[in-house]
Length: 206
Image (cartoon, rainbow, N blue to C red; front, side, top):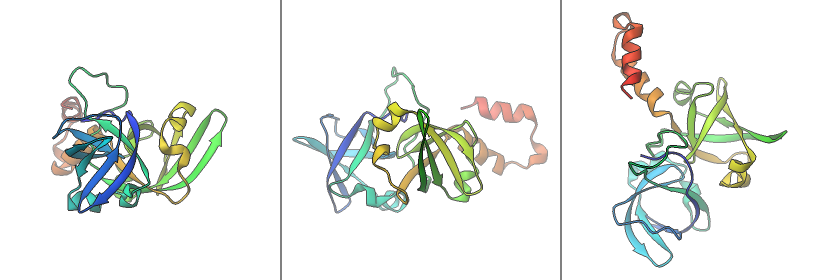
């Protein structure tokens, strides 16, 4: 489990035979979970100046893989500890959609980022709710027919890779865990059998 607060921007050193090598001053332990651009990966090897992680075939099919090539940089975040502060929102590191940057527009003291997203992903987006974009916890400003808009403050824009993003870039998306879980349970239960008390109970269960 992660919070969506980026620990470090790391350099991709190599990607070969499903193994991703990341250059970083952070020293994890073997078996640790690290979110790389929001995708939860397992540390399989340590080396001087970094560590290696393995990507399953399913993970490679689910993420914007072109952003993991040598020479690129990625957001990394170690898994939360029990006593850690939760400054973002609960992020699992399970990518459930790929978005495309449509517009990056500076406005007053903020930057508006519009991202095209799959329709099934947008069904899980709620205005003022949470979303993780390349592992960064953000608040949805608006949800449109085929996209959503994020309002990013200067600190976040300058301390992530967002300042390097261009129109057309593909990004990893993860919907809010609570919304996703409730939506799944609602699909499994006929609406005629649900009361508002049932919905409250489902929501409070998370």
